[in-house]
Image (cartoon, rainbow, N blue to C red; front, side, top):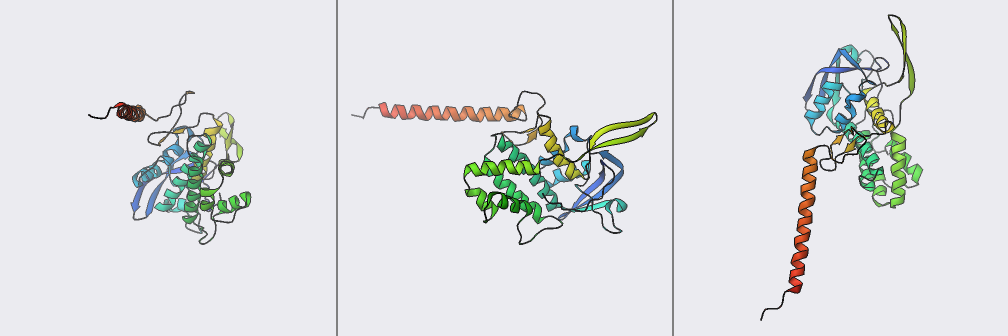
Length: 286
């Protein structure tokens, strides 16, 4: 995915939360909590990436931004976000980022056979277009960067969405794998050396410049840890797998609804078969 913003890097891994976030029209006004910075790498166990992907409403996105800060910070001459203590972001841009990250997760789910492969690829292609459209450096009238990459890789010249809707399923599977491999990656590793009272503490870490980069890395780390979160088959909410036993549903309520629906479907099918059987054996009236 192409670089979309100039980055103001606070430190190697620290990022500011927000004191408050107001939604005014199509904009988010974020008051930065400069004194409440947190470590992006150490935030992984609290699953901000899962929280972001599960955002459904504007209020969900606002609450996420309060808790974790803006996705990126802009550096402009004499008007840095950190200097002003405020970041102003477009709501449609935040929604496009959430859609893109969720589409990446759906690609992975499709590779596992849990979602339709063609539908997942079409959604990712659409999400990539949405992300390009809302970018600070959009390419109006041009093909988004990753669409061009797909065209070169698979040798087609039509619109990428039209191609994905009609291509052979074998090609779709290759494109699915290619899209995941190109977009789900680890950032550059590094060694951090921090001075302590009795010398230095040396730890291996990752170099993360923004919250957005951290969220993408967390999707990769999910796979590295071998216990990736799953999408609930009932409500589609993404939830962490806490044990080696794979769960299909995020809660007992979702499992109960799915079981009841399956039972009702089987009951209706049984009644239909019995009705047809009775009609076949019914004698004509005298």
